[in-house]
Amino acid sequence: MASQNEENLPASSSNAISLDDESQRPLQQDEVELGKRRYSRAWKHFKPVKDNGISYGLCKYCDRRYKNARNCGTKSMLDHIPKCPNRPRDVQNEGDTGGSYFDQDISRKQLAHAIILHEYPLSIVDHVGFRNFVASIQPMFKMVSRNTIKNDIIKFFDNLKSQTSKLLEKVTSRIAITTDMWTSNSNKKGFMAITGHFIDDSWRLQSHILRFAYVPAPHDKDALCGALVNCLFDWNLERKISTITVDNSSTNNAMIKTLLDEKLNKKDLLLTGRVFHVRCAAHILNLIMQEGLKVIGDSISKVRDSVLYWIGSAGRIERFEEAARLVHCSSEEQWSNAEDVSDKLILFYRITEQFSGTQYPTSSQYFTKVCEIKLELEAWVKEFNPLISDMASAMLLKFKKYWDDLHILMGVAAIFDPRYKMRLVEFFLPLIYGEEASTKIQEVRSNCYNLFQDYKSKLSGPHDSLASSSSEVTSFIEGDRLSSFDRFVASSGAIVETRSELDMYLEEGLLPRTPSFDNLSWWKTNGLKFPTLQKMARDLLAIPVSIVASESAFSTSGRLISPHRSRLHPTTLEALMCARTWLWNDLNGLSSTIDKVSCPTLLDEEEEPDSSGLSQHC
Image (cartoon, rainbow, N blue to C red; front, top):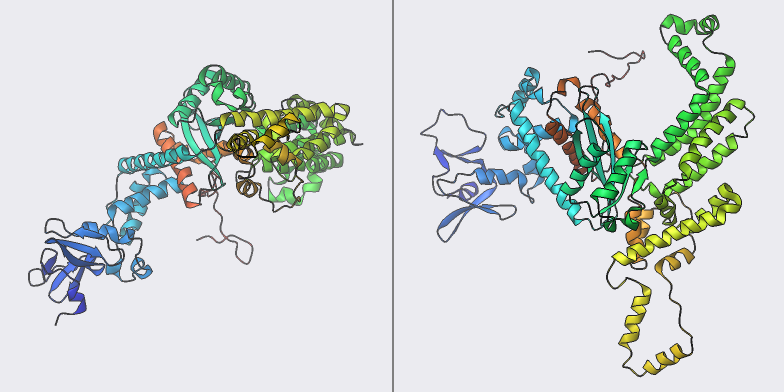
């Protein structure tokens, strides 16, 4: 009687080899031996079936079937095994040598992934040590050339770009853009990183790099505008943009003006483009700090000189106090001033970090933090320490230059936190403007209502307004017996005043100000009550107030465009940069952090110290 294993094997000899014919040939990886015959290892996971006289191999786990003809072989079945959705875990991790599964194409794909994710050089495929290592793990893998792996990476980039494009096509909200320019020190070429930000249907904040484009010199407004427009049209985003966040440079200002005046249709933009331009808050804070540091530059410089001298050698560290007195590096007063300045600037460091966040909305925090800085600077001006007072005065003058440009959307975005609403504006502005506060408060309120009406005019559907809903109900009941009641109410002047969604939202009480509050989750669950406001919140809360997402690309590319890669074609560089971000986003669950996982360079690596406190060297 045939054994159970034999019953699951095909009766024909198309996929079997007699041991009598090849008794000396070693057993191949994709074969199993049973009795006097060797069968493809696929038959451990498939069983033979026939349908209308045609032989098939039927997967034991998911019932997928493949033709089993003499000229077909079992490659399709072998390819299916590692991809089978119902494959048991023990099949995936078979411990015996024969149980492992090798696929040259899959291994090549994983090699390309590794090079992209960890920024290995393309020449790694030529490294003798790497080739020997791979051969020791899987001798069947045929190492590819540098040109082949580059082509694999380009194909992978094209595939990921197509997937990202389909994702953006399905996004029903507007997409905010951040962009920044950077020049490589290695080859002096200029690159523009362009990143899109949006809140998806699950109300998760997402960021996806769109381009890492080479921009030939000169980097004037026309060159930057051309690169940005090409990206927007390439991704079909020209009608879906909410804002563009850039650093505060005259070239960027001119680029935005050209975009609005010549390249984009203002009717497609919020408030016809009046809220299109967002200046990077982190960059503005840096300019304000630099202005203050100019006042105390001499003291800071001497402190730095002292530190450099101090760490110059072990002997200097031991004789530091004596050496400081001899070279007059810095006085006790200068050290004290530096400490005071450091304590004050912690505020700027903390707020800059918050503005640079990519895992949470930053637009709703902007108004509060900017007001906080303004009030702190005004307090510092009154300090008894003349150095702090002078520093604060210089910083306040710089701050006032940008305060008048407080972005319209940032004041409105603060209202879209149900813990604050208009009450936050009504709290801060009197502290800043005094008697003029009522006018400024009304400006913020008007901006909010204007934006609300702009959204309502662009929306269609049953929730366009409460007024339209009321008129529909009235027309519906005209034919019933209460129609005369409606005419009576109208003639008596007792018409019920309708209120907008925004009116009702602002009139409701504030939620408790708890640290664990999730603004995105709140708006996700309140769409039925505030449909128009929900759409506004989804767009406004996705707007970044910093270009840190685009700058993160450059922190990565500092290694990417290193001397050993300086001759790579810009197309290859873009494929490596963008594919790396998209791949990490996928692995990290759509994380918006571009450089969330970084592969350290040789100089970055450290060894754990031993018991004596010294690093162990192998």
